[in-house]
Each structure stands twice: as structure tokens, then as C-alpha cells.
Image (cartoon, rainbow, N blue to C red):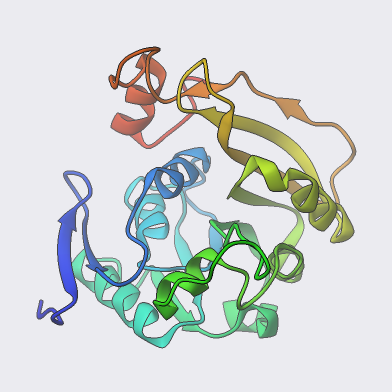
Length: 250
């Protein structure tokens, strides 16, 4: 696999290797936690909004959490990396990359409605913080090509009735997220807060919502990444990291 000058290959686990562009956002904890948050539904069809390098979709496919994934990515060069990552890992038939603005995506783009949609959307408003001089990073971090409302509207357009939308997001924007979900008939059903340790406020949240679902939400016990006063992973986080699954801890 030939690489461009700004690219490198990282080993994610025993089964996956990932081409990453050093000038764009690289694979991180939030992406891995979202992949682990997805339940195992081996025959399901899914869509990832904001595909990036494709790592979340590839983790889901490698762990047999779905049968196929359509990945929506607006940046041409990043979509190309995702296609090459799919080929590098033997999933070129299961991961179908669509280079398109998610605000223009319809169900016919994904061969009909799907069982679930998932996303690690940009966390920051255009008016929040300084835009990165690097365009790839700015688009990944700021709502350049769609606000959280647009991500939820796209999920609604692609999901079957009763289908699920899974999101990793920032706790300080939880009100925006809940409003966007309910405005699109996506009812929050499960919420998990992620903390660095038991002494710190949450730094991430994971949420699942159901299209057309009834009111009622389960709030899981907090997930702590590190033990207090150390940089050692907690037992719970180690299990997630080993299995890319939260089934044993939720």
C-alpha cells in the first residue's frame, strides 16, 4: 500500500491497521468508545456520518457488529483514505464510502433505510474557539459542514422506524444534542458519561436514541478511564479496550 508524504500506518489492534493523515485528526478515545458502544447486530446495515479515516466503521465490521456500513464523508482526500483503509483491512466490499455533504444525503444513497446510524460529529460551533489553520482539522472539530441538528436530521432520513442513532459528544453541549434529537423524532434512550477518573467532571458522553421511540431514558453508571491518582486504566476500561464492547460493564 503506497502512502503519501503526510501519511503513516498505525496498528489499532491485532486485526486492524489504519492509514492516517498527519495533518488531520487521528484516532482517539472518543472514536474507540463509540465503536464499543455499538451493540452486536451481525446482520444489520449501518451508516456512519462523518466517516473520517473509517476506523469506527472498520472496528464495527471487524467485531461483527454489522454486515455492511455506508460511510458519509465530505472531504475528498479523507474519503480516499477511508477507501484505502477498507481495502487494506479486507473490507472494501462491506464499507461503502460516499463522498457527499450529509445535508444532501437521502435514503437512496444508502440503498434504502438502515438499521442504525452512528457518528462522532464535530463538537464545536463555528463561533466557538479559534478555527485551526489546517482545513482538515477545522472541518473535523467545528460545525463547518453541518450542525448537530443536521446530523440528527440526516439520521432521521436514513433510519428505519425504530432504528437507533448512536453519538459520542461533549457534555457541555448536551442541551443542544437533546434538542436536536427530539426535533427529529429521535428519542434518547440510553446515556453514559465518561470521566478521566472519579475526581473529574465528565469529558465525553455516549447516547443512543430511537427513531419514533417512547419517552424514557436509562442513565448508566459513569465510566472512569483511569484509576484515581494514577495513569493505569480501570478494570472496566480495560475490558472495553480488549473487547471493543460495553456489554460486560453496562
